[in-house]
Length: 179
Image 1 (tube, one colour):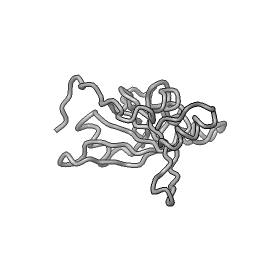
Image 2: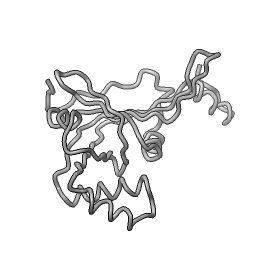
Image 3: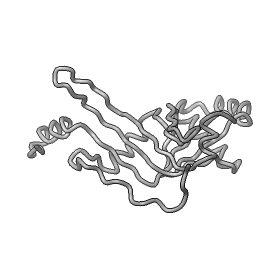
């Protein structure tokens, strides 16, 4: 069962040398086009769903059908996490992966305000098909009534990359690489 109220502090990253800066984490969120939204699903099983999104001013925005497992989960519990993988370069000979990823934790809400719902539709449309305002307007007029808009308020954001990428960057910058 979802417990509401104040969150305890989020766990600090164990391998701090691999932690991305907030600016780098936000840059990944701005660049990527999809991620995995994790919610508390039926019978309190985790429910993770791949989904398109747009990042804007500390928030993530999604769109959805009017009903379904995701919507039921959001209505049940407003706590969520969202993961984006920017890089996933498997290095078989080294038995590792050169990765860069971001995880956001926060509260998720169905947008009830019609003006905010319209703005969300516009942000999503412009993110995926920029500079096509007329076509976007037609799509919004035809489909807004069949769409839910969802806002994810980020409370904690963390990014991480493979230690090999940290060392590689340090070598390129002629600085001492962490061991």
